[in-house]
Amino acid sequence: MSATETKPLLSVRHLSKKFPVGKDFFGRANKFVHAVNDVSFDIMPGETFSLVGESGCGKSTTSRLINHLIKPNEGEILFEGKDVAKLSEKEVRPLRAEMQMVFQDPYGSLNPRMKVQDIISEPLLVHTKMSKGERLKKAQELLEVVGLSASHGERYPHEFSGGQRQRIGIARALSVNPKLIMADEPVSALDVSIQAQVLNLLRDVQEQYNLTYLFISHDLAVVEMISDRIGVMYLGSLMEVAPNEDLYSNPLHPYTQALLSAVPIPDPSIEKKHVLIEGDLPSPTNIPSGCPFHTRCPHATEKCKTEVPQMTEHTPGHFVKCHFPGVKI
Image (cartoon, rainbow, N blue to C red):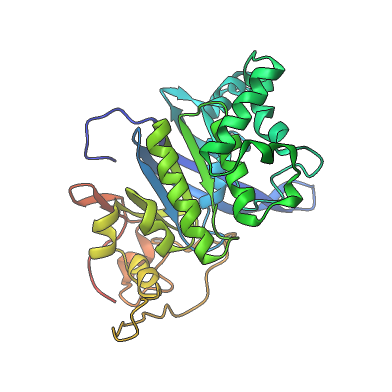
């Protein structure tokens, strides 16, 4: 789905995942949450690709599918040509060094009983043959890289602020020299001033270590700051994919337009039209027919209610899944 000819580091093809939430009289699953529905995208080496959308839209589930924490019902997840979805747990273990996670909760993701230097060096114990001394030296170096000091390695997670703990989480992800880092809401639990520091750190280490990011967030202001390309998800479906500037200057899907209208502008003298989406979010156990957004779209027609729109390239690199792209709401 990229306009470039560079081979993607990661290709997701027709990915779907549903979770059983109900059973019939015989104990067979008869009700499902459709968390991810026919999602496809590419991530190119060295870029930051972001997934945005409301809570429950399936963006975090997508990252867990890519990292083999859960298995898809359908689809392919090609990482450097290998289909991660078809690998066993034993076969995928070496790939975990190539694909690391930075989690949302900077405290819950760190073992409170381990010293920081041991937390950072733990992936090295699993994925390398480094000696204890070599692992300790690497951990101390990474603490310096993320803006802490080597002496902080002797402390425990509870002795740090939220922003510092997230820096520790980033250092842990960097320890095994990954190619892809999946950052799932990495700054949503932090104060706004600290968010900017962590985002700047992510950009700095991306350049330093030649990293590729899958960045997941519900905050479009944060996503604008760090992304090269953005995918907008709704009810488990990918509705629009575009380069950063294209998405913010010319959103084509009505759902994207509504999301962007809610992003606050720091200048109070600028008037901005806020688009209110009427109706409630449909249940993920009962996805609407046709376009999943038609129950809340002011421009929905009979075609929208019956025909599922296809992801089409409207302008170079700008893809949208809508029967009437570009109509303003």
